[in-house]
Length: 186
Image (tube, rainbow, N blue to C red; front, side, top):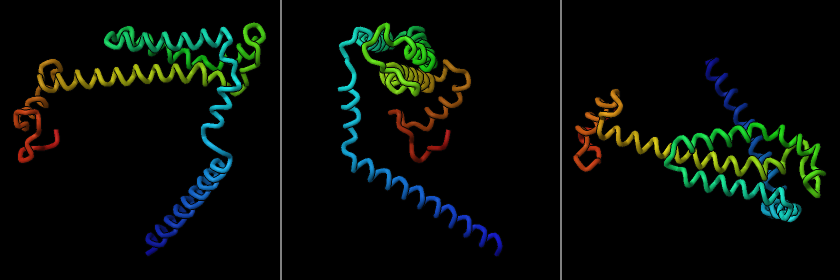
């Protein structure tokens, strides 16, 4: 009986916590909805930045070139991994680079874009690099899945997969679909 009472008390606490969290989320959502569109801060950011500054044009050009390189080298694993880890290293050092640029912004920019939180720099430096590295990661995972599927069908490239491939082929109906009467977890 004591354990049932303790379980009920615990569930009541969890329910109260859940209600508090959902109340807070609903309250924040109403405040955000009352302030206007979600796109207003994004548009304000875009209009606040002078996109004609040479260093910003160069930075955006670099991101476009890296993205084109990532797409063009999608079948070259060495080039993809070089781009991937280079992008991650650049993201890792973004905070330090933001600090350096914050100290020296007068030498290359017309406005002080760099703050101690790094919001602007994260937006123009890290987000495009994260998009590129995510694209490379998805490409690598798709390539790996294709290779694994080939190995699973052939069963001869990875020694441990021979048994799995034989089991898969026996359970298939010949068209690549599993036979329902003979299916089992592999």
